[in-house]
Length: 337
Image (cartoon, rainbow, N blue to C red; front, side):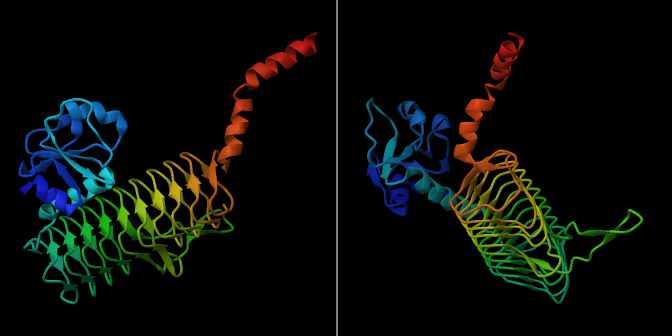
């Protein structure tokens, strides 16, 4: 896919400083830029590379002024990072423009597949399911019965989407995810064994949700496990039965949320966070990596530690407990005296 610097600038409302007609056919990191590529400068610590990059064009902020000679054409914008994201999407269009159904698929006659959708090889689709416009279902995907997938979704290889799952528009589900498996529900018997509790609910995923590789989202025991619009889940995340995650919440890798917990809107949850079941986390909460959350959290809180406490209180406490060996030594010395 070929553009000029001027065409790229027009896409992101930028101003060109340099050769407006220079050819652009790929994207690159600024330190690895080569002829024909476009890159960006958003983080000041990479500024030194703009004077040596071989990229044909570089997206920079409106207030950037070079202090040395540069060879790259500048495209000045308000927000370089956001603008470069738009350019990534522009170059990605060609990669995702697939249509048709592979001969090596198994699709039940009762399911409806849009004429504009793509279904890859060795994919299986069960009864009464619906694949909407412009969806891309890659190779070796399993889609169960009565599944609905909205417009513009991309499902990567090896994903399993089990019965009754509903997925909104423009979602991305990365390789080897499992959506709609049974929740972890067992009732203890008198003899110490466990009886499985039937999981009869489903999973509902909103619009513009992205789910990282090897993540799992369990169906509800009753009702629905709900992932609301705009949620972003990293790789290797476990979402248990009947969990609800609010709009535009982001959760980093290897975190787990136990059953029936409700997480609010616009939360940011770090990697390897463990959240117990049946609690409520408010809106705009920030949880530091490796925290263990064992009770309700009010909106706008910042917490860390295990069990998690206020981020500010944790830092104050840390000043003291990191010095405990010296404090104990002093106490022992005074006791011996």
